[in-house]
Image (cartoon, rainbow, N blue to C red; front, side):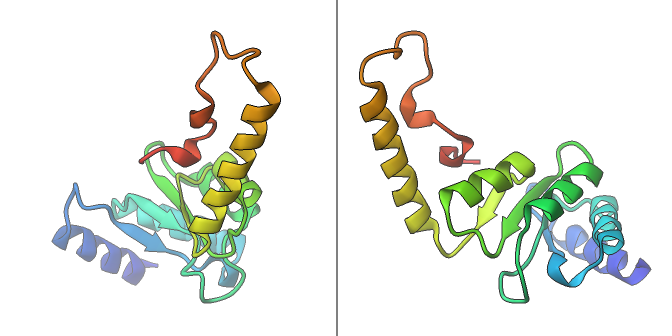
Length: 146
């Protein structure tokens, strides 16, 4: 563990804030204990993000692993869920579990799916209930720039 910490801290030293430092865990190859340890090591080395996977080395992100990661990192540290996120529902589930960002090669499809869902909601609601409510075009954090 000490070598992992030393490596991450060295990168942080070379790339200080405001550069965002993401540590990729490849969670599909780790036990829950190792995921917790990796999150705490990344936190101690002042990483900004822990990322579930590269998307190339196994299962990719799972809601369970994102929840576990969120439960052990300090406030302000972020999670990027990557690998296997292919639909709006999967994207929203990852964000609800604690992911701040989503890494996917299906971004265009997800946004088209979201647009279609938004159009369905807009059509179903019509002008009823639009007073005193959020604009429909801001239905989820998915559309934020963070």
